[in-house]
Length: 531
Image (cartoon, rainbow, N blue to C red; front, side, top):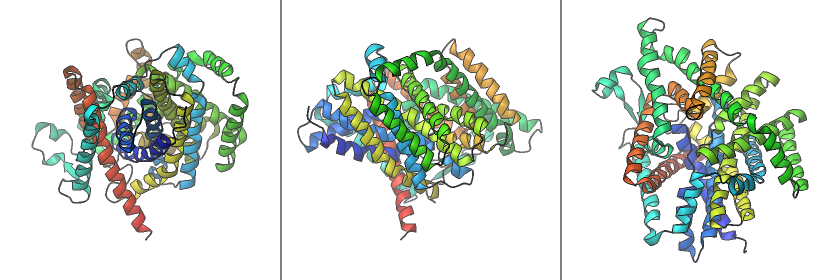
């Protein structure tokens, strides 16, 4: 089989673009959805334009392209916590974190294809959907027209809002004469991204998220203010709602780890022992290289570096499995677990704690993305070794760019800074609260207990991950939760009308267009400061 050089070059270029818009959109809505489906359509259109192509070349290109999205997710969920705490991180540190986390996720996913894709036949819904789209092709370019058309719409919205001021950047709910507006007085950017993100996430998760927001904003906070426990809503949010919600998320993450990871430790070790025989020497050399990078670049103790790699190994496995079962990769939860453990056991400084959490988060995200791609490749008959090369190319390409993207967004007077109303970055805010606290606050501890108990109870009826959605809703602004919820309702309607796939392409295109223009504006602003 010929080496797909053209597909790798295209995939590397698209991976950078995907990382850029995923970073912007993820900071805005607190999540990054799988980009495989949209990138399959884009790759199909561009490769067809360049000349004769085939389904396997298209799959190789989208494998490389989608890697940038999950790499960006691992970074936006963690690295901004450093800036929120008022500390500094360098471009070199972000680059090394990206490479170590990304390569670790790939390395630990290699043996999992046989177990999870071939033997257990886990569904990997987005990988399966991607294969179906590539297999069906794009007669008359209808799918490509949807994606590129909505890319244009998203781009126009961003330009009209951020560059020309035609669309207001912030709408205050105080100006809306509606009963519901009397309960809160926050603002939000006029954007297609939250609605599109809610559509891609789906109705169940967004509904539970919104339920947490309703409880926090219309029950808990008004009660605290009415009883004179706090003078203002801001005080109530800061002292109670935020730490309670973060605690619920952390508690659910801990419970989720014990529910999903611990029962599989024995088979996890056995699977890697068997699958590692053929390439044990290469596997070992790569592990030594990754440990050395952590030891010398971050000046960690060798033992701590080994523990960090082991943590990444475990979380990559769980991320790959959960992705296959539920089509959700709760990577930021794995980062929180490792961060709390590292803080309690080793007491690192804040920057180092976040960097270690980022390595674990990226590893779990990239592993989930690669397994989605390998599922598509298994259905299409794509050479898995070539997909492995494609994933590496996508990770490396995005790693060299994503640091500049984060710096640009954080310093931009138009779309930033990160952690502001325009880019709330809820996961990074939660991470900063954990890292910055000298000890667990009372309300955070209460939330952790609630999260653990609720996760174990909910697991009997559904899945513990739903408790995480509820906790996020408790502490993020309701004007982020509301459009996500509306997007989830639109998805519910689309599912009933058989419009799901077209809607997914429209949502993905809108996110890409608005996110890409937003990041481009920030990058131009960053460049001009050095001229």
